[in-house]
Structures are given as structure tokens and as C-alpha cells.
Amino acid sequence: MRYLSTRGHPDRKRFCEILLEGLAPDGGLYLPEHYPQVDAATLARWRQLPYAELAFEILSLYIDDIPAADLQALCAKTYTREVFGTEAIVPLRPLEDGVFLEALSNGPTLAFKDMAMQLLGNLFEYELGRRGEELNILGATSGDTGSAAEYAMRGKKGVRVFMTSPYGRMSPFQQAQMFSLQDANIHNLAVDGVFDDCQDIVKAVSNDLAFKRQYRIGTVNSINWARLLAQVVYYFAGYFQATKAEGEHVSFTVPSGNFGNICAGHVARMMGLPIAKLVVATNENDVLDEFFRTGVYRVRGSADTHETSSPSMDISKASNFERFVFDLLGRDGARTAALFGAGLAQTGRFDLSADPLFAQAATRFGFASGKSTHADRLATIRDTWARFNQMIDTHTADGLKVAREQLSAGVPMVVLETALPIKFAETIVEALGRAPERPAKFDGIENLPRRVQRVPADADVIKRYIAEHCA
Ligand SMILES: *Cc1c(COP(=O)(O)O)cnc(C)c1O
Image 1 (cartoon, rainbow, N blue to C red):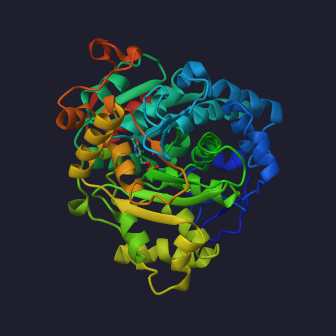
Image 2: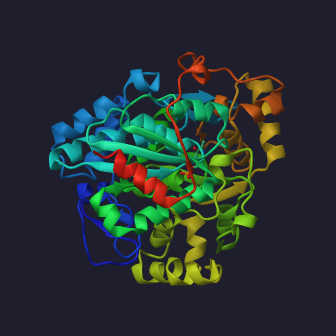
């Protein structure tokens, strides 16, 4: 399998070449040259497999530069009951007739990002070891991504993590999760500023090409193809649990921000997994819902980006969306480049409403969408608790609210549970008047010693810190 850029660059690369890279040289995102097709006989065979074996089967269709035995070992080491809490790894829980929650949040940091990041940690360690190289991951987080990255990379050989976060602005639980890590290769940098300041620092450091090369700076953001590929696996696992035999269809609803999670669903559907609908659920930041309703994609300014009670979906633009648009436009790299390159930078929007291809987003690719607000979130959390005695987090509540608007008779609807309620306790208390349960392994983490460096919002200070800690 070779990988190409969504913006038409002529290079074709192999998996391990793009593993440690971010954007393609022309600013596009990497996608496989084609989607391997899976027939009913293969699905029937995969249905019997434990999760780690299923992951190995799917990954081997896309990775041909890691020996099969090594890839199998990496999958077996990643997807264990010890790390994810159950044998099923992503168990399905029934709600009302035909509606299920797929639990993706039982990994080390209690959000679905662990599903991909845990694999990425093992892939990075493997590939860096093979090359005899090191990597310094620099990131910015407002919560879920940073902790998932740190728990995936802690103690890994050849990798250091420098994670910036806005001082005092993450939830107390999220701060405790990250700052209690004592591993020598994990560096928490609490920046005097807001999340945007952290992102600006990461950009400034990455734009200093000499520094970037000298200190081997890399990232783990959601545009990484390996993260997306790891997420494809749980669409198959969800399908097998919601159906009895091949040929039956299932729909998925996905709480969405950067379009990473649901883009993996799109890949699974393109491979031939019988998915009826892929439903995009947004919060008040409805960039994606607007596109799927109207054909207009409109990037929001910072004044137009709302701080909500499902904060991991508070986005101004959807960084993975270009991958889907590339497929929607018949894989026309020049046209994708025109829409997402200079055009978007200038006007902040594009409009496909008059293009006959836009209708295919629903008809050919199965997409639908909806939006949820703070009031919807509270109502859904209350209703789910009252009727089913199940406590769900705010992001999952957005998904469930939208899923119920998109049900079709006879087609199971699987809603992806993207975090556990303990991560967003304040809103749970607002909805239910009681605090969420806390998994035993997190008892008392607020009282553990903390390892965090407070720094000014100054890229030069961060660079000095990195240089001093790279010896
Ligand atoms: C990251 C995140 C999302 C959004 O996922 P995307 O891949 O950006 O669409 C939703 N819910 C939670 C809890 C998250 O951490």
C-alpha cells in the first residue's frame, strides 16, 4: 500500500514514512491510494476474532513495511484487558430498542483517544528503535489529547513529550491525570495564557526549521494517518456486536470535532463494512452540521467559537475534513487544493451546494448530521440516567441526542461513547445533582505529587526548556 496527498502531490509513500510525519509536503493530508475491499466471507471470519487479532487483520491491509509477526505483536501488546478493562476492549451496551453505546473510553485516560494513541506509542517506539532515532513530541492541549499522548508515550524508549497546556484552565481531574505522571520522558509545561497561546507556541517552534531539525520535533495530532487507521478497527468491532450475520446494516453516530473519529468510520464504510448511515453530531460549534445540511463549509473566527460543556468538540475548523472532501470530489487533488489551500485562507469558506457531487455526501457516502446544545446535553444525561440507570458524559450525550433523530426501523444505531462522565464532572452535577463515579484506579489522584513546570507564553523559553531537557 502506498499513500498519497489530498492535494495532488506526485509522491507516493509507505506507511512508516508517513508515521512520523505531519502534513504532506504540499499541505495536504495522507490517504491510502485505494481502500482495500472486504467481502462477506472475510467479515464472517473476522467476526470470530478477539480485538487485537481483528486490529492486526485490518492494519495489515494498510501496512506492508512492518513484518507481519512484529505488527501482530504490537497489536497484541496494545489491546489488552489490562489496559482497556475488558476482554471485548470496546463492549456494546444496549439502551432502548435498537440503540447501543459502544464503550471506547475505558483506556488509561478515559477518552476514546486512547484507542489510537496507545497503538501510536508502540508504533513510535518500534520504528524509532529500528531507525536508531529519537523524537521529541511537542503538543498543545486543553485536556483529552495531551493526557492520551502522555499515557501512551510514558516510559517509551526514544520518545520525549513536551506538552503545553493553559495554566489553571483544565478541569481539576484532567490536571491531576497529567501532572501526576512521574516518568522522566514526560514534561508538562503549564503556560501562563489560554489554549490559543499554547497552539501559537507549538506553531512558532515548528516554524523554526533549524530548531525543529536539530531537536527532532514531531507531533501526535489528529491528522496522523496511523491514529485514524487504529480507529477504523472499532467500527468493525461495533458492527460485529450489533449484528448476528453478514449482510445486516448498522448506523453509527459520532460526537465530532476535528472529524477524525468519524473519518475512520468513512474509511470502514469505503472498505465495504455494511454501514447504513454515518451521523455527525456536533455541539454549538456546528461547522460540520452546517456543511452536511447546506453544502457550505465556513471556518469560525475565535469570537465565533463557543466554549461549551462538551469542550473536546469546541473547534473552529475540522482538521480532518479535507480527507472526506477529497473522496467526495472523486479524489480530485487539484480541486481539493483549491478549496482548502489559498481559497480557504482568504475567504474562510467554500460552497459546494450547487455541485451535484454534494448530494452524494448523503446518497453515496451515507452521511447525515445534527447538532446538540447545552440544554439538550443536560436533558439527555438526565433521561439516560432515569430510564436506563446509565451515566453518560457530555460528548456522548450530544451523540445520543442526534442519533435519536436519525433512527431507521430495523437498523441498529451505535453511538460512540467518547469519554467517561468523571472527566466532565461539573456538568454531570448540574444535570443530575450528584457526582459521577470514579474508576478505582483514579482514587485520590488529586493528592499525588505533581510534576509540572510553569512557564510564560514565550516560544523562546519553551525552546530553551526543550534544549536543556534533550541531553
Ligand atoms: C477528541 C474528542 C472528540 C472529537 O473527536 P474528533 O476526532 O476530533 O471528531 C469527541 N469527544 C471527546 C471526548 C474527545 O476527546
